[in-house]
Amino acid sequence: MAESEMRGKAPPPARYPKSAACLCGALRVTASVPPQMVHACSCLDCQRQSGSAFSYSAFFAASAVSVEGEFRSWRRTSDSGRWQETDFCATCGGGLVSRLEALPGLVCVPVGCFADPDFQAPGTLYWASKRHRWLDVPACVETVETQ
Ligand SMILES: [Zn+2]
Ligand SMILES: [Zn+2]
Image (cartoon, rainbow, N blue to C red):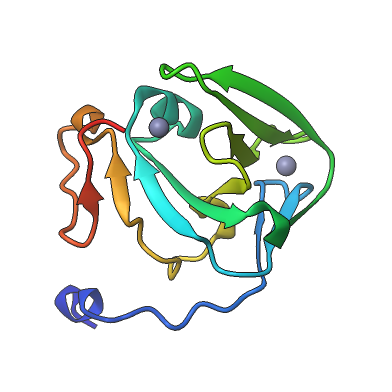
């Protein structure tokens, strides 16, 4: 199929519950309902944490998410002075679940950990001002220069 035909195609309807896992599979998270929001962020902390040009994260109601496996938690403080805590797999070190002081009641899961190319696109790219120069943002994604 030509790439232009692929682009206009809507992904199949998402099915829940849906599970995400770290690279080794020892730490798993299952969400029973779709995320409340999905966004990307090009802030320099997200670049460092993801090892990529931006983070791509789904935010679920904490009550809709269950975690299985052994993990270690680490908390950092962002430029805004608020904390963000991430649970990392005790075996492979992959970060799987984060909680943000700024978003109480929600947990954040990196979309890549769902290994699902049909996962919904981010609604917003935050910190677009810090994005890598080669990165053109598609029209369906709103950009915010900072946060
Ligand atoms: Zn692991
Ligand atoms: Zn960020």
